[in-house]
Length: 173
Image (cartoon, rainbow, N blue to C red; front, side, top):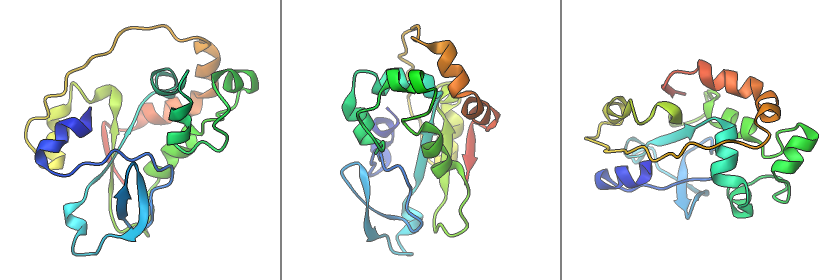
């Protein structure tokens, strides 16, 4: 959704790489490659990491979609919601993925703009200003839903939910 809105302002890639590179590299498909971006080109590139409540993410992108688990490079893509609930473990590595992008790394040669999905529609003008672009025109299209095992999932993701909640709408690392 954000990629579609940003395409009118330049090249955009939707990346699924679990570990952002220390030195920014080119993209192939939905993953970073090993081909570096030169220092001269760096100002033309912006990395945005959108994060959201992992419970909602589970149901919107991964339950019933094994390809989603493969996309984000889950160590064992055969594991699913039932395994997470049974073992009470973040088998999909949402916490690891989140920390890989939101933890500052002094060795990176680029910044990551971390954006809280839950606020993106109401605060899209702020995001556009940070990105130096015009109107994003994002329209919220969520349907209310109930989540199986929500109570157990809230316990499993308690610490991660608290960390996400404590972050500002936009955090640059």
